[in-house]
Image (tube, rainbow, N blue to C red; front, side, top):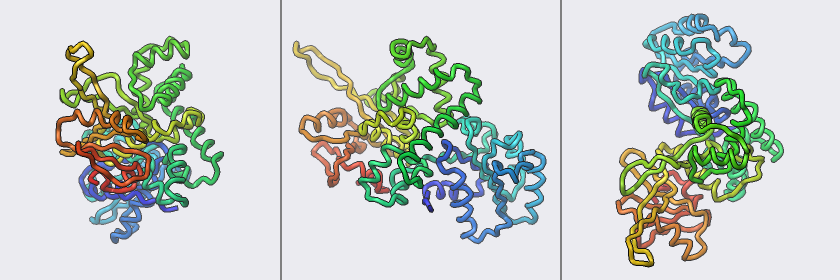
Amino acid sequence: MNIKRDKYLNDLINRMHNGMIKVVTGIRRCGKSYLIFKIFRGYLLEQGVDEEHIVSIELDQRKNKKYRDPDVILEYIESCVADGGQYYILLDEVQLLEDFEEVLNSLLHIENVDVYVTGSNSRFLSKDVITEFRGRGDEIHIYPLTFKEFMQVYDKDVYHGWAEYVIYGGLPLTVTMKTEEQKIDYLTRLFEETYLRDIIERYHIEKTQELEDLVNVLASAIGSLTNVAKIEATFKSVIHSNISANTIRQYIGYLEDAFIINKANRYDVKGRKYIGTPMKYYFEDVGLRNARLGFRQTEETHIMENIIYNELRSRGYSVDVGVVEKRGLDQSGKQKRTYLEIDFIANLGSKRYYIQSAFSMPTEEKQMQEKASLIHVNDSFKKIILVKDIMNVTRDENGITTMSVYDFLLRENSLEL
């Protein structure tokens, strides 16, 4: 099954020969190895690069175990660079290489090599891994399949595809599985035996149940404002645990560093400043989130919001939760301030979009409710409401665009419609 991942291929192409180590990061099983060894290697061959000028080493294979020794792999790579032509070094599961930071820094001193690496455990996936290369690392973060990528290989219509995607997410292997039982077992085992185990082993966590409980709390609260104090209160009242706020904060950091969850901070639109807590947390893959909860809490409204967040992030946007102040009079005629929420503020360079995830707006009252926060934004950036309904793209007298989530996810220029 050939899954095109053109965005990430272009990311790699645009970074070729830049004198930096290209570091492909991402959650386990999201397609990092496939990107490097299948898609990018195929591109190099199509461009006329000689096979002997592509040095590929998959360090997790038994036959390549000897190359986990830093001196052995350096000697091998240097022996492969037989002339003054351009060479491409592709290393997979580089965390298995002893002193891999030193090896990669050494490769930077060979003028005619271009280095691309991936890794899959929490040590390598840590967001601070780039600092190991002393400012000479260039990160390409790869996400699970977007809905558009998913539909490239899904063999039914878009409506069945959506129903499948909101439950099982976008990890590439799930698309190839034929039965629900296979998908459920795969995602459940992957979360328990891979993601959590990586974190537990890296940070030597002894109270593993508290980490698992925290994951469940966050999974249940996607799309809801929360903070450490609120989570601590939940532990005390519901789980009857005395886990400290500092431990909760640490564990959330571990989950973020492993790219299991991401946070969206609150931003005051009129005050032009970040508010701090509370914030929202979203899962990198909704299938993993659902698996963590035993596929019991699959509320489509919240999952759609998570999917929209992931789509914006995969397109390169930084994403915040918006807060806008509304002033008026109360029943006694006194000045009254209320604060309205905007689901997402998406920023990329000079571009900004205000986006509401509404799921459906069956009544005029619901339409006004969803539009209220957008109407009170005074700047000229585009304002969009996304609904699940199939509909033509419309724009009202307030300049608010309403479109189907299918158009948003499947059309490349959807934010400009």
